[in-house]
Structure formats: C-alpha cells, structure tokens
Length: 335
Image (cartoon, rainbow, N blue to C red; front, side, top):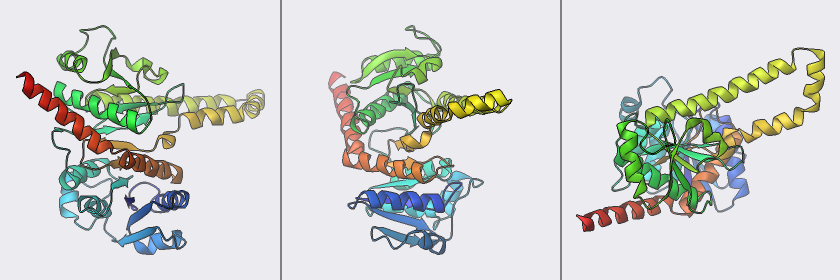
C-alpha cells in the first residue's frame, strides 16, 4: 500500500510531517510513503528509510492562497502533485495538513468524486466522554446543503464508522435545535424524513450540548452549522484548559494541588486530543483524502496515516459507492 503525503503543508512542515511518516513505515513494513516537497529539507530527516520516496518540488500552496486559483495555477505545488499521485494510480490515498480549501479543490478537480455523490463532506472524529468519539459531517466542505446531501453524508459516515472504527450499526443523529420530531429548519425537517427511510441506524435529532456525551456515533448537518459546532467545541476546550491552568497557578495552595493531579490532567488532555483520531476525511471522493489539522505534530500525522490505511484496507470508498448505487437502483424500481 502506498500513501502520498504533502510534506510542505501545515504549521510544522516538513519536520513533523516527515517524523510521522518515518514512524508509520517503521511500524508497518508493507507500507510505502511518497513525500512531496523540498528534497533538501526532507531528506536529512528520513535517515535512509527504504519505504519512503521523495518527489521534489519547491512550489507549495500557502494559507493565504485562494484555494481554487492556487490548485489551477500552481501545477507543481506539493499538494497538487500529491493528488495526482492518487489520480494516476501511484498512490492509494493522500494526506495534507495544508490549506483546507485547496485540499478540497484538489480532491474535487484532481481525485474526483464517487459516482452518485453530489457533494463531498469534510468529516473529523471528535472526542466523547467514553473515549469512543463521534464522526461529525459536514464541517465546511459545503456551507449550504440540501436534504439529499445530508442523506448521503449519513450513508458515508455510517460506512466509515462501521468499517474503520469497528462500530456495529453506528447510531446516526441529525444535529438540530431540539430532539423532538418536526423541530428545526425546513432543511432539518426534510432531512429527518429522508434519514428515516435510509439503510442506517437513524436515532433522530440530537442537540449540540449532548455531542460530547456520545449521544451518536455519526452526526450529520450542513457545513455552516457543522463548522460552527466544531469550532465551538475546540474553542471551549482550549478556554477551559486555559482557565484551569490559570486557577492552578494562582496561589501556593493551588500549585500544590496542581502537582497532585498533574498526571490526571494530562490524561484528560490526551483524551480530548484531536491527534489521537487522525484527520478529517474528505468523504465522497474516489479515493481516501485526509485533511490533517494545520498544527499537526508527528503523532497526528502517524494517526492520519493509520486512518488512511484502514480506509484503503476496508475499501471504504468502494462500499460507499456500492451503497449509493444500491439506493439509486431501489429508488428507480419504486418510481
């Protein structure tokens, strides 16, 4: 299996990207990784690993670049060349911690969509109290959505969680302003009806306050609401840890208490660490495309590689395609 990685994307590229790749090939001798980026910066970090190759380029897409224009004009950018490796069959999946919009554009224009999928979804796994996590989609690939898109998100999310995360009959919830049937916007009401008839374990509406309690294994919503929910969760977690740290450092007594619960607090922080869940999958594309967090360290990249590997091994893309095709056949037979 070969994974292509944009070595120049992210806040800590290429050092942390390369370290994560080296750790991954060390753990799995069957894995081959292609790193795309500046060879002068990458090669000294590899230590002559046999399972890592480099495609040299000095061009890259930055966070300031306009996504679509950058993908079309920067033909030799590391992210563009990465996507081409997948498109042309030299890699089974790809990963980048770079510009999110550009990665979505590269995924759409170069890798392409699964037949029948109208819009891909950006889908991170977020932590829950029980440590199992839940998949949230979409979180920004598409700001607007129709009920049919949310139905496809639910199908893709359910297949992924079942095949990659090993959850039998994943519970799928629709993010809404209340749990009662018939609540929410016109989009939510139409999506609710669509999801009730889908081949998934739909549990109905779920509220944002219950997400981290593990109320569902898959939560679907439009990209606008999903992005707000994602950033609210991230911001709240960061603020709470900052407030706790400030409290512990406020006096000698609190500093003493902090020394007693230091390991417990570290375990709690690790439990909420995004890096343990890999990256956000761009579901709906013709091959696995993973968006790693912009501030990813080596551990996050390593887990993103494992995530992509599992998606390839379990043929998640193929199973999504089969499910969508089967639903369309069923609809045609009814009409």
